[in-house]
Amino acid sequence: MPELLEIGKLSAGYGPLRVLHEIDMTVRAGERLGLVGLNGHGKTTLIRALTHMSGWQQGSIKLDGKEIGGARSLGAGRRTPGLVRMGIGVAPQGDAIFPGLSVRKHLECGAFSKLAWRERKGRIDRIFDIFPPLRPLEHALVGKLSGGERRMVSIGRMLMTEARLYLIDEPSLGLAPKISHRVMEALWDLPVEGAMIIAEQNVALLTGRADRMIGMHAGRLRGDVGHVALS
Amino acid sequence: MDLGLIIYALNLSAIYALMAIGISILWSSVGIINMAHGATFAVSGYAAWLITGVMKPVIAEMLGNGGLATFAMAGTLVGSALVAGALCGVVIYLLAFLPIHDKPNFQVRALIVTLGLNIAAVQGLLWTFGPRNQGLPKIFGFGRWEVWGTKIRYDQAGTIIGAAIIMTLTLAWLRYSRRGLEVRAMMQNAEGAAYSGISRQVTALPVLMLTGALAGMAAALLSQTIFVSPTAGVIPLVKGLTIALLGGLGSVPGAMIGALLVGFLEAIVGAIPFLGQRYVMFATFLFIIAVLIIRPRGIGGLLDDTRE
Image (cartoon, rainbow over all chains, first blue to last red; front, side, top):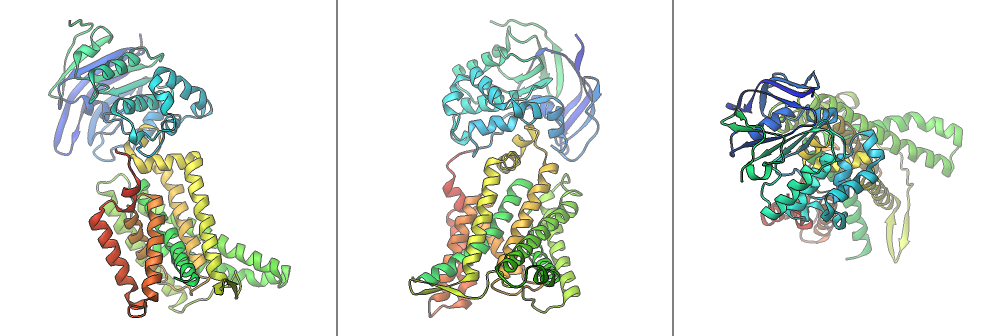
């Protein structure tokens, strides 16, 4: 399979703090990659650096052979919308929802490309098929929903436009075990072509389903563990 | 309270709401506290004065002196003020947003740059036109209606109706258009908006033009009651900023309710015999400070029962 994402010597951090230390990794097209590690070891920073949301960063990031990385010390988030439009879908940590907008409006926000906007009705329906609990909440304000429903809205927003690479940060964070299982099941069953990087602390949720798992420790990648089965 | 007082209060509220909504939308979506809003107000007023001055003979020649001519005059005045306001928005975008929007402490920098723009624009107007007040043509005419024994001046009624129309249009645009959806998304969560492919650099321009046009509308309407002068924008700016704060900076309904509250407060304080006009500002600020001490998120915080 061709390499979709090639990261070379990527360092990133916030102010004087260096969180990522010269990371090298590749992701193949269509691959579902689990990124595991403890809190504070750089999973979220890696995902944020891929979309230019970290405080600063340096090193190469190639998406389909096109360089989207580079050294940057300012302007967090400046290139993010452009990268999202290039085909990086993100479900960020903490969901980044719009509290005063309804579920439908959220999903419409996700349909930013011309094609997705034209087809938004059908696509919203598809999201409701993936996450059935959202259907009756179509016109509810997302600021009044529960944590699990917000996570579904956030992932649904990401899915409204086809991406080549999906970045999902801690899909189980703050959810009850039963609900986090349901969200993870929906993620594995997604009918999408793009590659997926799922950052997760709970190894058991990735076991057996992720194509590959990479550990993260103190801002460095630790071992490409491949298929693991923990019982 | 008699009807005249209510009309006067609504008249004040309409002008304040136009200013406050602009400041509130701009702050929460783009992150600029626009100190140049007052300059936009004054510049729009002068633009309307200049253009109506040029157009008056032309319109008189073409349409004579009847109702149609007054209508054309009104269109020219409001249109030129709106366009001038929107152009001021473009200038603010080019000077106070684009060069600094990805630098650290953008919000403080933008505050300083817009304050500088405000001072420069007011001095520029003084330099060019001098400190004299300029009267604009009265598009609503002189006169008053008698409603239940109270006299309502045409300019008051026109201001209230005009402001209501413009605000309804603005709210409808925010609510139903795609660009409006993007602006609302940006107001509520900048990071989520970026992950939805909504670019701040692109969206900031229409927002600045819209808020500029709102200030232009306020200038056009207020010019029917008082004269235009280089420093005419100062009081509307201060009132707009404080009312936007009272409304909870970022809440459009909050700003509208705040404008109504302050308008009525000022009208009532002005009408109480032993207080009178000189206590109006005093009472307004006391009220806003008291509200913000009790409810730090302002009126918007009372209306909003969602959580981040």
